[in-house]
Amino acid sequence: LATWLMFRTGVLVRATHTVLTWVITLILFLHDTGKFIQTGPTHLRKCEERGELLLPALFFLVVVLSVLLYFAVSLMDPGFVLTDTGAQGSNEEMESMIPQASTPRLRRCGYCLLQPMRAKHCQTCKRCVRRFDHHCPWIENCVGERNHRWFIVYLLVQLLALLWALHIALSGVSPSVTWELWFRVNGFLLVALGVVGVFSMVVLLLLCCHLYLVSINCTTWEFMSRHRISYLKNCGDEENPFDRGVFCNLWDFFCICRTVVWEQENNSGP
Image 1: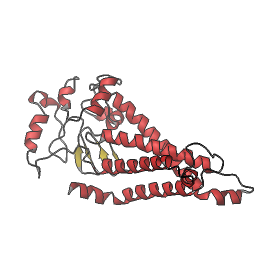
Image 2: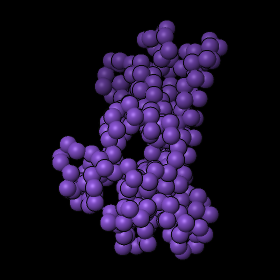
Image 3: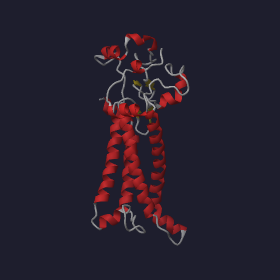
Image 4: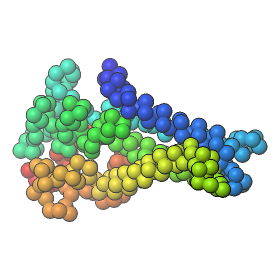
């Protein structure tokens, strides 16, 4: 039911992403992108005509994987905090999440009963999310404890698909004797090139920012609002109570799938 509600609320955004992805893919497959580069991995149509299907198939599989990861991240539970309304066993979860010794650090949400450390209430999703990073309008879902690593994997695959598509599109732009004829011949390819170029820059920027934040064990919300967060505002500008070093931070983030009691990990004091 929760997955269905999440799908329904973001159906327009998800439909736009899916349609845009496949329209651009079809343009790249149907347009003659091998007019001037007759060899190499750029010309999908030339490969198809010669029966060399390996590279077109690989490109198609990368696009399919990016779409599947998009829907997985978009529909996944980002780490919603259970409340005592409609969730059995939530009291036990609260007791296990918050040890008695850390009571002075407890934070109460104005909407939910409990807000563990590093969680934040999302005004769009109307729920608190563990290790809240941000609410992403493009996936119509929060990025939090459970789907943050998959969000970064999605960005990696999406960037690979975009850069490959950018290379294919650039190889197909052909010169003409007049500007009017040039736009007529390359019109669809230029549109695809513009869309892919913009998204490539956005995804690259997002990926670099998230990898940096993960390497220091910080979230976007904490990085942008540390002066307003109770467990960070008394720390120095360069101090992060959760930072265990780049290697440990990356290992814990990508390789360890568990709910972390951040009250026990925080060494900064109440």
